[in-house]
Length: 521
Length: 73
Image (tube, rainbow over all chains, first blue to last red; front, side):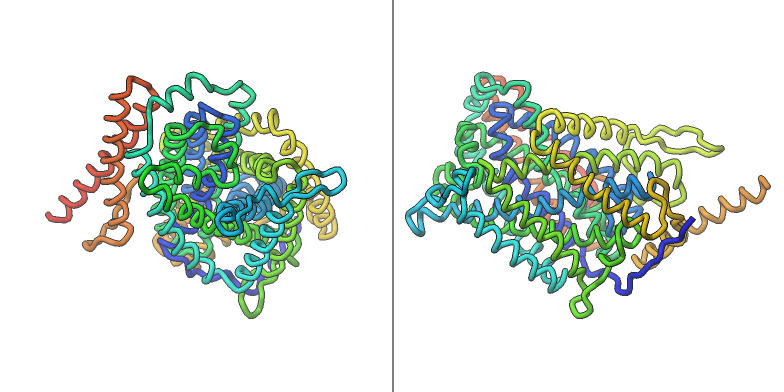
């Protein structure tokens, strides 16, 4: 079998701290509620809190799986890397293609939403609502051209920031992330204290419960409020002492985001009718903040400003994630090493930043030709995420059997010890439950997302054509794997991460395995 | 499962303070939600949210208490 050529010359720097790693994740996942609240309310209606809680439980399991894998394999590839290691090149490619789709949509969706929050100020500044800046282009009516231009400007800024380097972006994430956590906490506390009416929540639940189709659509959209854990594993490559840091940051992150998502939806339904959020899909948190007595006049605009900022950062993590993912995929012969080039001056993957941001720009423009850009982008977003997460769960289960030697600083709870090839393996029961949960949401996406179920598989097919061409050109097998030296790779990763204790454990486990093999021979 | 991992060294870090503050806030908020929910009639969802906040807050605070007690020794 062919041996993959590593053409990488420059490495990504390990300069992200504990706080930076947490904020990197929070800036991405925490911002999702700013978009998802309006979208989910529009479909899940009086049952929005339940939908957020159900999606959140599955998200917690996904988070635990990522925590285990990212701390065991702290490299930039994230989910597709775990899939590649567990299930081989082809499935690694499928996971990578699904996630790349999500990163490009992430850029488009969050930049659009960021501009949406900025538009909250329009009536105050120019006396006109964003709804008045529309035109008809051929068969497309009510095209929000001004909002589209704003979004494109934001994406262009992100391209520039990311080419300049990760350090500047991480600092931005950390500073604004802190501000957002404080604001969200204040809103939740003040909201529950002064504006929340439990009887109104109960009334909406009893009289405005959605149809089964809307409930399923809402549930599959709610999962997008939790997409972004990938960022933490992406950041693992650039985090100091990742095996120690990643479990701490991601576990804190998982519960913070879950609590905020459930709190906001419960608060929202106890303060305003769901129709109000559906009407203001572009800035739902600002509408909620505005409705809080005493502080609303100030909290509304403040939340809108912060929402714009955090969504801008979240869009930024899409740019960062896409570039780091292609960096990893090219390293393992899934895509061309041409993607692997790092900017000689800024040491950032400039080519991939430009290419995938441009795809994000195309998606933005196309989505603005539909009746609701945010709904269209959200519709496509869930497909890639659920497909990628399903593969990650399968890989986690498989790796417990095929790679028991790699030390796991954190393991998903609920394991059953079973015998396998003469040794005891921890079978992850929660991993199986999580896999079934995500697969159910993927099924709901295929059933209810009219755009996502076409655009998602079409994107995978398009990527497959490229993958087949590239693998054939290089003489690599299409459905089988290139021979990767994972043991050497793991030693290099742990050495580079300065995880010397884990390195020693790993080497000892391998030596013991080799000794047993010799004895059998 | 290590759901809350405070720094094992003697001095508290910025992250530890963050976790202590959020735990206190969670407990207070949970209590408020629960009381308000109870006063407006029994509705399972509101009770779950309030109880969830309160339970998680108390669990985290008990962890912090054990940790601080351990440090004193």
